[in-house]
Length: 193
Image 1 (cartoon, rainbow, N blue to C red):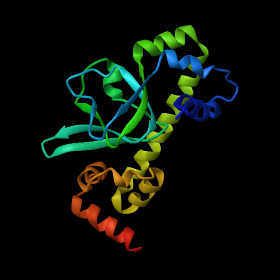
Image 2: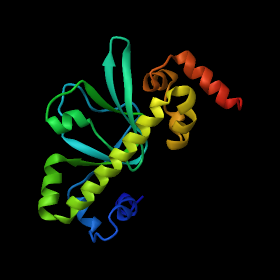
Image 3: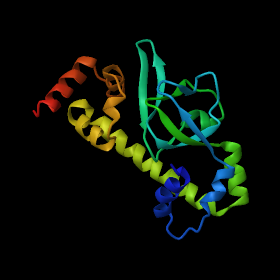
């Protein structure tokens, strides 16, 4: 699959007047393929890159005494990274893990700076990508805030196929509820209630 063409198709509408040669991105991006449950960034490291997801789902987690908490889910066309560690340049309690098999482009901070220096027009696209990411995070936050009873159906619509990759425990941690509540909501949804 031509993933650079996919990026172009995804990003062109964000800044319609931008004339950017996406083939130049190949010099700055690294295409990666990872398997479900692989940790991409752990708590002992500093986040040094962002990941544009071409296929699959990635999760942002943190650990508690009760176990891991899935705090954010990223899907195709999202940019996934540990925001806190990336922005501060410090370790955080968050880790980034594949929720499914994933294909993504990795852009290191250093490569991003070089890209913007060599192709300043990319800065405009970068701002548009960040703006879209913030809108998506806000929408997902509002879905989560509804709670699982009111938000689960919308969650599944917004992230098609995610239910195939998440255990009831991960769904429960994402919606801050019990696994029993997850089962009840799933059963009600499946039986058409």
